[in-house]
Image (cartoon, rainbow, N blue to C red; front, side):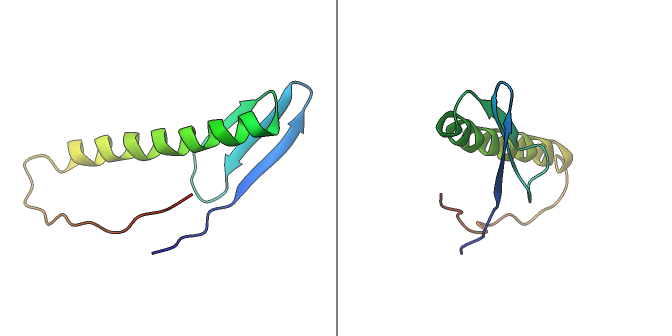
Length: 74
């Protein structure tokens, strides 16, 4: 599975701001664009981890089917 995500970077007076268009909440900043890119990967990982924890809490005590869906690669 391959899913295309779009990173957007804006120059600011303090460096760069970056976010992923398709993933609300995945945003960051950095002094350089390279730092911002690195930070954005971490932000995406944290958003996915947080969403996973929220979902697990919501399905507690419910009968569910869980399976691997796919892998996104950077």
